[in-house]
Image (cartoon, rainbow, N blue to C red; front, top):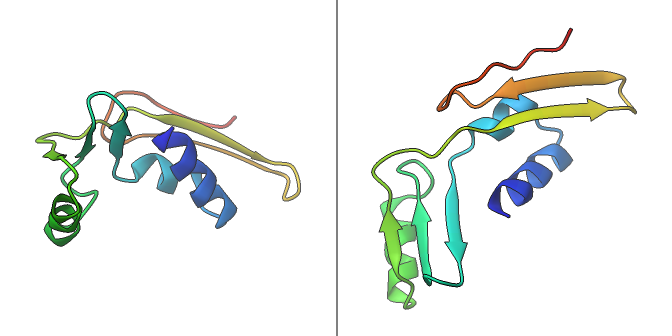
Length: 94
């Protein structure tokens, strides 16, 4: 769900595929009830603010990236693809 939300937000702002697959990630689900985030996702101040509000915050020691994306913008007549630089993969438009 985080990936979908981030991708939608970035796309609606006119972002490019390479920008959205490179965004730092965070994750929360009901059980276990905790928020996990990559090192670059949030500042320590934000993490502490969540903890002060009673959230369990887990600081991941590594990145989780391995996302591929294709954007087909029919209105602009453009197709672009990108591969997350943190994972394996390749994306190209021919």
